[in-house]
Length: 140
Image (cartoon, rainbow, N blue to C red):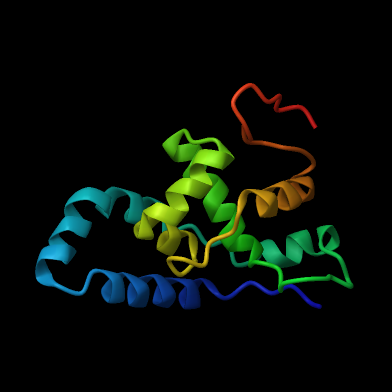
């Protein structure tokens, strides 16, 4: 199975559509602008669409189970966790409970990756760059 990453324009369209769907009233849109504007304007301009081709060798050519997540979306999650100062465990909870976080990372609310998915993703970067659990070592 070939891993692919959607284009940056497709990602921006996804984010825009999902935010409009999730925050569908003027009051909700004001809430979004007031509390999440800086985060949205920080993460959405980052074009990670080439991530799939850069990480191709880290993915199995014969994967089992579910279709792999877009590596650009996974990398966006890692950037978000780092910006928010979250461990992967806490970041996964945040993705699942804060729809804006899921959306800006490229996922539909309720369809976000779990902790194990991040464990599987990290070796593609040569180790564990984020603190996975409190007290865990960052060493590979």
